[in-house]
Length: 245
Ligand SMILES: *[C@@H]1O[C@H](CO)[C@@H](O)[C@H](O)[C@H]1NC(C)=O
View 1 (tube, protein in one colour):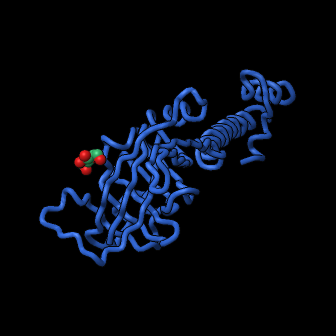
View 2: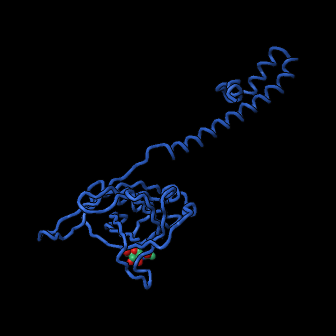
View 3: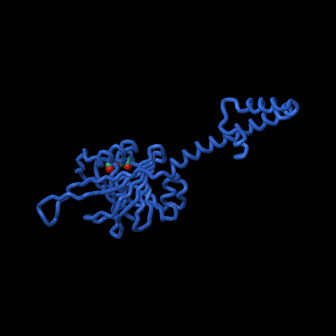
């Protein structure tokens, strides 16, 4: 294909006609023979160029989408907690990093281990197409999946605006804490049904489905429950998510 492309390198408007004319001047006999040849070659050249161009465009788009470093947003909010040991209320910071992909309708949120509170580090996916949230507990390497709560998790565009406000410092990041308690209801064996992003996130990890405790009718709180805690935000307040097995 490359060789064909070179047969009319960056010629003017009508490279094919020019080539024919050149041959015609030299020898009329060769010209009739050569004109078929050059028309064919010319078509191949154009086809080749079209392929190369299409390849460049598609390739460029792919490189842009998948290989360019993504912009990660860092955000920090703090909420007030009353101390057991002192009269003074104090502020606890919650930091997280977000990778928001608006065109895929998905947000990835990384929560490091908190400095001043107990809690687990986690990696969270909010998939707005599948309407699912997956919490990957990084210490336990377990994945927990629940329906996305659209009244708590801001859509990607608004989430991006929130993180930009947090980063610019024009937004006062002192907020409040909302607690929620989620309970494991069943194990999910086939994570491929959860959409590509959660699939990639939870593949090879023990994965469980969750439900809000206040939506389970008649469930007694068992004393032997093991719970983990993840503090994160996807809105203007911090959510304290307890996940119990
Ligand atoms: C979403 O979250 C809010 C606040 O935590 C809660 O009141 C509501 O029941 C949740 N909705 C669903 C569908 O889980």
